[in-house]
Length: 270
Image (cartoon, rainbow, N blue to C red; front, top):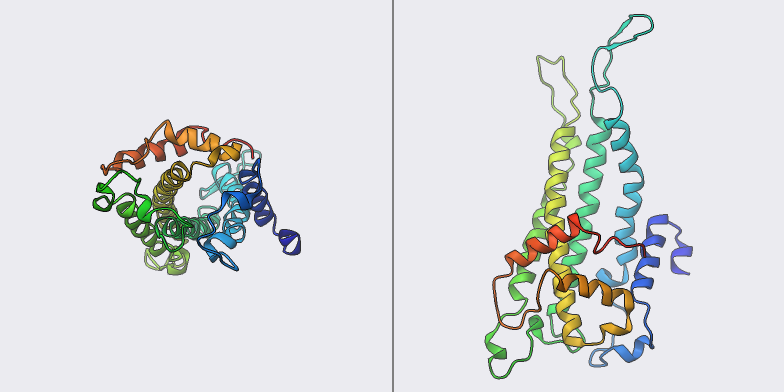
């Protein structure tokens, strides 16, 4: 009903996927800890379809633009093989790529920021509905001496901030060069390099997000009632063990990034 009232395709698609992922065998009320009752969830949860829907809808025009650019003539001059005519023009101009990459990096950074805000909710005992602070596993008297996911949440925040900083649109900084022959350049290369960097940063935030969610699910021990999430948790545990005692987690992040990039662990049809 909510997505029907604001029918952006990306928003509706994300909402459907979230609903399917959260589909459970029992009432959702039975899965929740009543220690914290709220009238409305924070925006990073409540508006997730609206936030991630922007990225989904942006890809619907970014991908075709990139495909056209990659499969067309980007040179000058262009030669007509039928007539031999030499045509002087400006197909080298990367304006579409510049705006596509500027849009991509902004939408990606916003998605990464949303993941970071959700991580912050998970590690905070005031907002995580009964989970231990920093997702520290209960293990006798030493529990208060361990950090759990504290450093992971700090790292996620730093990565998200760096991604957001890189969203300044490159296309807005067009310069004149080559004695004003090239007096209006696209800045497409800079935009693409920025987008690649933001993609790498967002990937790491997503990896930390998945690891934190898996840790929370292990502590809560109710994931089996949600089959699709249970499958995702099993896949996460193929590359990263639960955090019982404090340990360096940089390699866990890299393995999770590799799983996101190179496997179908999280690409199944939902």
